[in-house]
Image 1 (cartoon, rainbow, N blue to C red):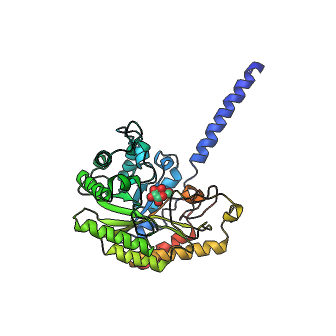
Image 2: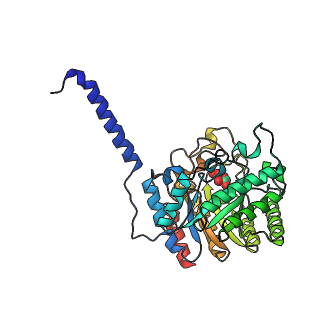
Image 3: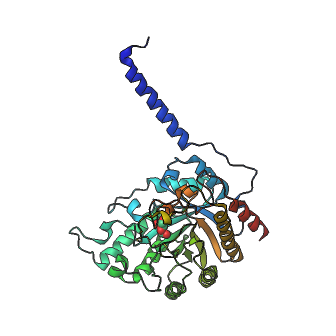
Amino acid sequence: MLKRKNIPFLILFLSVIFTFYSYNKSENPSININPNEKSLKEALKGKFHIGTTLNAWQIMGRRPEEMEIVKKHFNSIVSENIMKSERIQPEQGEFDFSLADKFVEFGEANNMHIHGHTLIWHSQTPDWFFVDQNGNPVSKEVLIERMKDHIQAVVGRYKGRIHSWDVVNEAIEDDGSYRDSKFYKIIGEDFIKLAFEFAHKADPDARLYYNDYSMSNPRKRNGVVNMVKNLHKEGVPIHGIGMQGHIGLGNPDIHEFENSLEAYGKLGEVMITELDLSVLPSPWGDAGAEISDNYQYEDKMNPFPDALPEEVQQQFTKRYLAFFELFLKHQDNISRVALWGINDGNSWKNNWPVRGRTDYPLLFDRNNKAKPVVKEIIELASRK
Ligand code: GLA
């Protein structure tokens, strides 16, 4: 018999069960992949890898439905944040490979191409990297040593398992000059060459990339082309260039994007590394990705908080198709096209460069439903 004094315990017990049930339900929504529908990876087979980035939740197994999309449509993966130095070596000599190991295991279990992101970058690098015990900037020699240790440990651990790496990320400014990062200030431009040499030594078979945003900007293009040519002259093992594809409905100019594809294609492989198409107004009218830029929220900057109007959806489809048409045209030079997220809910664009907006930049919607553009890309690829 239920005693009155036990009622609070019963209520507590039932609410724990209820919370657990609803939590699991929301974490495990029903999986609605249709095995009879052709996938992106089937349509693009023999042309280039089609990839996506994975975030920590997905890697930890908390987003099973999103992972079903990955398995169905993609044959290449890259980690969004967990392999950046602040995550993988938060304290000097203290590496945390737990999620990176899981990420690589998932790729291997599903026979995927695995891309490592990123070894040397001015952002999301822990502070200790650049200072001594007293907080003073380290010498050139010490920073080179730290770069070497980091690259050897990370690339070495996944030798033969991670197929390609973004070795250096975002070292060139939009005007084509070197970014005045701490790596550049302390070591000089040689930090780039050294990073590639350390990575090559740690895994001679891995394909090594330079990766950056606004890569269709002509001045930036010149800067990158000159840098890579000089590195090649010095015999530095750099195999390709990653064009981050953070694009908008109006920017960048697709012809300039094509000019860059051609220019970089002459220097090695090209990867479209971080593709997403923002439909939201940009505070500065450009589609670059300078991570330190952030703007105050205003309603007028968030025009589609509930749903995307059909007319904008159509513009979105048209623009994505125009870019895929370009990628297919240059398929001989392109080894991989990777989306920067699986569904719209995952995208960093909801919070950058303005926090708290609702953007729609990816191929799958917030309910993991393929957008109309997916079918169109599949049809386009099947014809090319
Ligand atoms: C840059 C980096 C990525 C990521 C994006 C924002 O493009 O290369 O790792 O941080 O910014 O998500």
